[in-house]
Length: 428
Image (cartoon, rainbow, N blue to C red):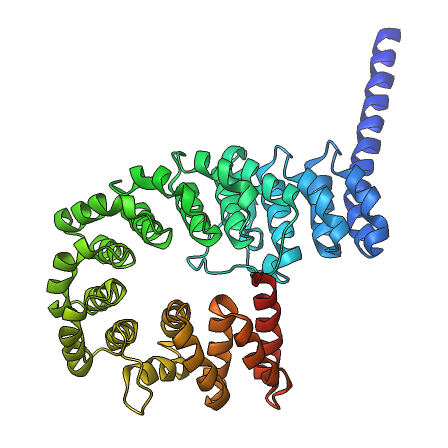
C-alpha cells in the first residue's frame, strides 16, 4: 500500500510538472507577438528567442523581426537563416528581401506556407521578375547568407526560395554558392538559380552553366538557353546552334534562337535569315533582332520588307529595332525609330520596347534622339524613356531628366527622381 501511494504521488508530481511546462511554452509563444508591438527596442529580446527549443516560439520570433523590419532586424534574420527548420529559413529569407523590397512578404513564398502533419507545403508563383533598384546595395552578410542557404538549406523549398531572393537582391556574394546550387537534383532550385544569375548579370559564370543547355527538362533547358544569351556567352554559340537544329520542341526552339540572336556573331546570319519568313511570330522577331545586332548592311532590305509586311506588332517592333540598330535613325511619324518609342504607350509592347530602347541607348547618337523624345513624349513615353536612360544614359541624360523632376504629372516627376538617382549611382 505504501509503495502504491508513493507511485501515485510521483505520478501527480510529474503530471503537474508537465502541465506547468506546457503553460510556459504557451506563454513563450505569445511573447514575440507582444514584443513586435514595441518596435526596434525589442530586437535584442527577439534575437535571444531565436534559440528557443520550441519551434513555434522561433517561428513567431522571426515573424516579429520581419514585422519590425528595420535595419536592426537584418542581423537576427541572417542568424535565423541558419536554423534547421525550413519554415524559419523561408520566413527569414523573405524578411531579408522585404527590407530592401517593402511588401515582398505579402507575395513571397512565406505567404503560402502551410504545415500539415509535420510536413511543410509552399507554392512558388510563376512570376519571377522582381529586382531591387540598381543603386541599392545589400549588406554582404545578407548576400552570403542567401547563397549559403541556396546551397545547403534543409529543404528544397528553402533552397529554391533563397536562390530566388539572391536574384531579387542581385546578391553577388551568393554567386559561388549558386554555382553549387545548380547541381541540385531539385528542378526548382536549379531554375531559381538560373534566373538569379540572369538578374545578377555576372558574365564570368556563363561557361559553367553550359552543361544545362542540353538537359532534358524543358523548363530548365529554356532557362539555361535564355541565360546563355543574357550573359553574352559567345562561347556557347556552337551548342546553341546544335540545340536549335535538333529540337522539335517549340519553346526550346524559340529560346535557342533568341539566345543566338543576342550574340552578334556574323556566323549567325545564315542561321537567322531563314527565320525572317517563319510562321512563328516569336521566331521572326528573334531573327530580326539578331540581324539588327550583327549590323550587316546587306540585310537592311530584307529587314525593311519585314517591317512593312509584318502583321504581328511585337515582331514588327523587333524589325523596327533592327532597322534603327542598322542606322535608320530618321525621326518621322512612320519611321522605325518612332515606332519603337510609340510602343511605350502600348501595354502589351511597353516592356519589350523598354528593353530594346535600353540597348539602342548605348549609342551616343541615339541617346541624343531619346533626349529629344523625352521632352516631347506622352506620359507613358516619358516614364519609359526615363527608365531606359537610367540604365543606359550618360551625364547629358542626367541634364535631360532634370526638368522632368518638376513635371506637373506626379507619375513622371517621381519616375524622374528615381531615374536620376539610379543614373548618378551608375556614372563614374
